[in-house]
Amino acid sequence: MSSEFEYPHSENGIINDWVEYASIRMPRFLITKESLEKKMAKSKAILAEVREEFEKGTSTEDAGDTHGQYHNEYEWYRQQSLQMRELIGRKIGQNLDLAVVISDYDEVRETLKKLGVDPGRIATISSKVGVLYPEETDPEEIILVSVLDSGGRPEWVSVESPLGLALMGHKEGDNVVYKLARQNQKPLEIPVKIASLS
Image (cartoon, rainbow, N blue to C red; front, top):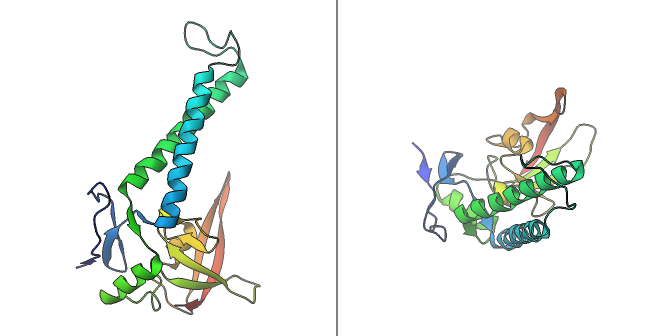
């Protein structure tokens, strides 16, 4: 039976997407204050830019006929691009609405330790991992973070990324393989060693 991570509720009082890491049930959408501010700004900027583009209207007088078909190929692609960007902006905002804000991943580490899981002994969210690639002599230092914090800093790697998923549950010294999808090709299998865990 899993333990439950005690979190304050998200701002809207609802946590409806849960995951389990190292037998600890926790909200999927954790996010640091630093990332929240950046992603909120990005979401608003995308939506504002799309709104402004839509207000400009079509690029030619003859952009569409009575059936809504675009005669101008550029305009059709432009409209598709705007709709996609709007979806991205809205999706970012929706995920942020579900997020539980944390100060940093040291907070997560300490809470996990209190629940009996040491991120320095088993790779899980908030673990600091030294990843050694074949033919390399120096490991790459990463921190396993929530999907919403992915890319927030160069060393932050999402637990839901191919590398993050491969590392989860392993210990120092373990060798793992993760797969990278490639268009129209067999996935690339990349072996790595967990050189350090803290």
